[in-house]
Image (cartoon, rainbow, N blue to C red; front, side):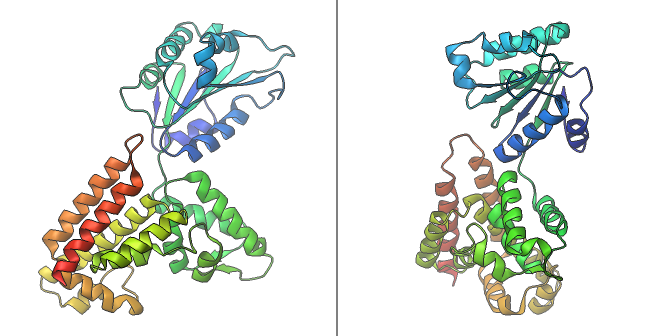
Length: 350
């Protein structure tokens, strides 16, 4: 069966008794791993760490294809529940795994253990995914990267648990640095809480300076700088900033999302101007409004980019995001080419 949307967390917190196994898959491997760990405790809370739990990798199955079936059928030596965790880095044994899933789904009484499969992104053509989604006793849960609103909530909840606040500009500058990886976000939030003394000082607040000081990638060229240099046609400066950022472990996807956000704000202001609003009024009407220190650059970008080209650029961002989700895609190069193309256009228009 396929579990989607808001049902996922409820299901993971209390899976039905008839469920034998769960497939966790998706591009956010951090979320796959954390959900797998949480589900293991729910599935078999009394599992014996030595004899009741078995970890199998994709390479284990390549050398011993029957290992998974044997472990699923083996009874616990000391009684109690058993758990099998299968971590897939490839699907070379997809046919055998999907056949096993169908077999246990037909006769669930054969299963002496619960199964958790942790995998990367899987297309709808994946034999394993299709077998799980078509079954009655197995469940498939996709783990996609959290969106910006999810991350904002995760930040505030994680810091709020220690009575630590965070300023709006710190949130917006932190988001692009942790987007796309749930485990990275959780780790960075914990690190920031430690930096702020876990709220030991009354009124502790995370500021932009804190992000720049210790956040992963915060010390490198800022995403705002890269986006600004691209959209104002500073080709060489943008290319150098981008290389420094990537070398400093700033996610190219985070930079792409930062670019999308700025293009969307420019588009919104441009639409308002096309409806007859003065430029200044259109900028002040944005939510959040353009910061005073950024008004001149934002105004310059509006002069360079007309509505039609902004809409076309947003479409190219979507194409780049889609291409980056392909397995093995050169994400660094995809984002770099897009930034250079936009900078080249802006340079001609300046």
